[in-house]
Image (cartoon, rainbow, N blue to C red; front, side, top):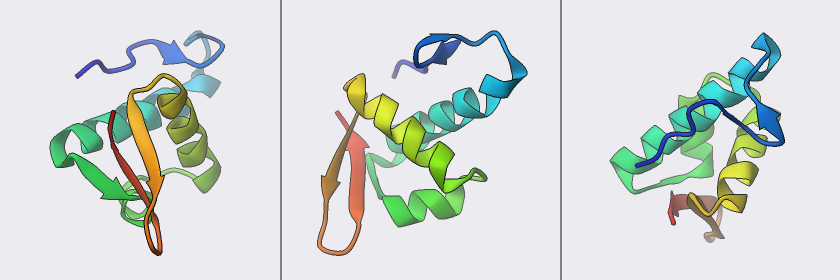
Length: 81
């Protein structure tokens, strides 16, 4: 598992404003690594972050091919790539 240490899409983690993105991204990776996959609704209930921040982190992890997002019957499923 590769945690995104000092990762922030589009630049370095040089501001405390970017800290929530780093924390959320790393927590998502840790959860996916331990569980293998999780429903988006479950992930939202686990994380202490806004929906926007969660979706942004998922989007960037998906772009980096670190996670896979697929649509289930009623929810999105997030899993390891």
